[in-house]
Amino acid sequence: MKIVKKKVGNVLVNLVDVDKFKSICGAIFFKMPVTKEMMTTRSLIRSILLHSCKKYPSNRLLNINCLENYDAYYSSNFRRDGNYATNYFLFRTLDDRYTDKQNLNRVMDTFYEIIFNPNASCEKFDEDEFNLAKQKLRSSIESKKERAQSYAMDMLYKQIGDNTPISYVSQLDILDKITNESLYKEYLNMINNSEVSFVVAGKNVTKLNFDKFLEKIKSRTYDNNLLVKPLINENFNEKTEEYNGLQSVLAVGLKLKDLTEFESTYVLPVYNNILGAGASSRLFNIIREKHSLCYSCFSRAEKDDNIIEIYAGIENENYKKTLRLIKEVVGSMNKIETDEFKRSIIDITSSLKESLDELSNYVVPIYLNNLYNEKDISEKIEDIKKVTKQDVENLSKKIFITDSFFFKGGKTSA
Image 1 (tube, rainbow, N blue to C red):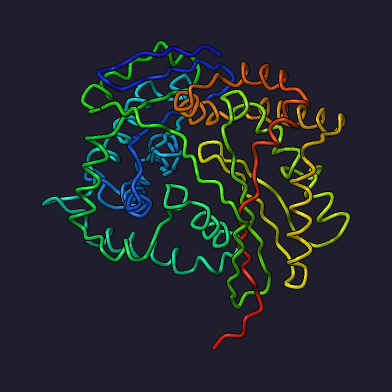
Image 2 (spheres, rainbow, N blue to C red; image 1 turned 30 degrees about the vertical axis):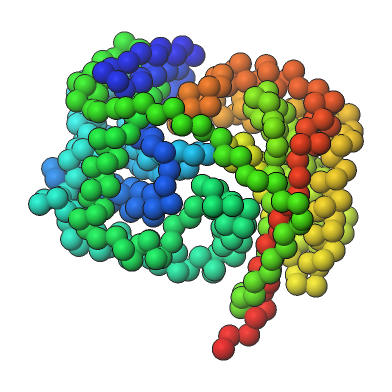
């Protein structure tokens, strides 16, 4: 794998030569400091832009164009990383070695049209598409309680967020205030005031010229602090909400304090793997296998927010015991067994190696490596191997279990 970095105007470009795929995959990223409103507005923008554009003013016409270009694929996503929000748009198509020689040019032309020439006029999106996107997002927010795990995690984020970006989620009251005109203004804000990056991966892409696609794109630079540093609660904050679902959900929050760059990048994944990431983790073995208290149980580390989330799907009567055991497991992480440490290193390095078998894993991770100032996957594997058992035990002293949210099922509907 060879990576070439350059600038086209103010746009940071990464060209990743990898020769084991027959496709080319790329993405453009629009990064800005996050606001609470963006969690709602940017989700709408993501939906509208992928539905049609001025050149292909219906979803049917856009899909026909994709099929005509050897089933080219386009997608979009929105993510928050710490104090930043990023909308990104991805394309994937067969390499020109396997098509006619103008296929990539046509795909890039459609890609540009989707992002920069939306189906809009008079500074408004198409009214039907705006209403459709808004209704879809409304339905998703209103039905969140039906997805108990997602709802419990959102409520935990609000609880531990302390009005930081951790607590930002899509909200109905913000959605209700969005007009077609205001959303179009936010779209213009995105394309005119973002820090823009472009990543492409595939065989011999360093020999390709994407300047025509990039040269008119505006980009600025932000130097805001990336990481969120939540306040550490002095007292454990325990909340319960009832609902009429069948399964109850327990979500537990851990906050991290004063981690070094090495700890957050390399030691934290090992700690989390031992704690709750996988079928050999302590949470799974003790809470599910040994005590049969839950249907599922896992943990997830968010280095940008300095938190770890723990999830358990349980019965109501198992709440107190499950919470007690989670606290005990977290407390026990100051002593790590050699076998589980070695198994964790193998799990993580194997997962990183397997990720190289998917072309798209050369695109978004490159953007994130730049965002976090990290190394590429091959170098990351070597640094993971440098983590010691003592590093993991020392990290446990910087981790505090602070919050829980119990989404209690079985409530009788009124």
